[in-house]
Image 1 (cartoon, rainbow, N blue to C red):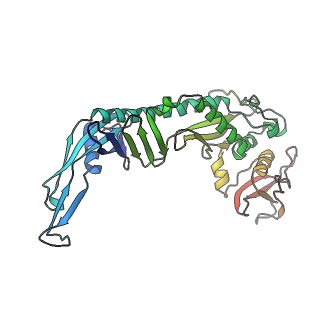
Image 2: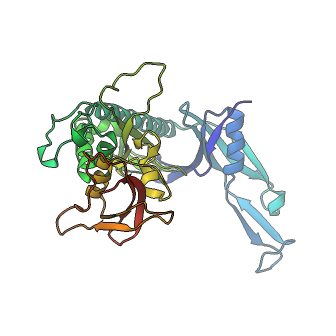
Image 3: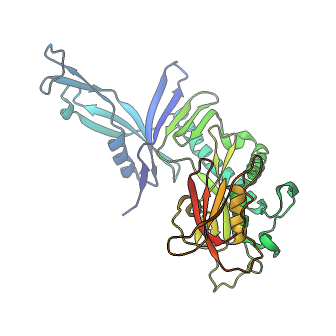
Length: 386
């Protein structure tokens, strides 16, 4: 059996401006993913029935079950196959006009598109494909160029640290700390945003916008006018497509590994997506795909405070540098121990006390709590005691 999926709330209104009249034709539609003609018709019959209007009969002012008449207006309904860029237009109508609601018979007859409707539909397919290709190309380029965050912010330049292997000095060799700095410090997301949008500005807008103008592209759908007449208003029930930019952070000596060994390096991941007008690319940290350690994602670290996993001293310091405040509990007894101290954010500064020592030989672990500005507990993780 052929497996298909369709977007249940994908609604298209094609505003086709006729050359011989000022009237605007509204054509509704839905989308499928790799559907046949019969499957498209089934979707049209399920989703594209014309609106029925019922009125009372027999000199009554109120509609009753026995005395009412129902009418509808024929409409063109298009199924857009986003997998194959195919349109399936149907003329939808009801037989037995003027009868009761349950006596109306739905008709779905395959029809054709006008030349203008075909042009607008093709432009719509083109702009979706081109914007995806554009985003993919920029994402792949920036994945190569994304810099690792080892050095103080003041020392950063466009040509600094484009390697993917950490150095072996102090915290510079700590992959978890590197990922935390890259994803929690906003300067790195800002640098990536500037880079991808600089690439976008170097491309002709007609390349990825086709002939559309006044574009609105978001999680609710796609709306645009078309230069020369006509336009689209496309609604959908899924978020706009995005691309992932990820940077693996290798430990010294692990840049290459034997094919028979399993190795999951730390990874910083960012999501690129279009803004409403397709004029800018938005950049967000992708917490779920960011890997702080081989068995700990950034999302789990920041959103699940039940972990008994342990981070290094360097990673704890990186969290202190990027979260509001922290507190360490010494592991004395089953009750969890006593508080060693709390590191608050001084005015204009970062948390600086207490900090674990990356060079310490002690194996003692504390339970670290990290808090937001409102004092809410956000992270619980084990790590070296200060």
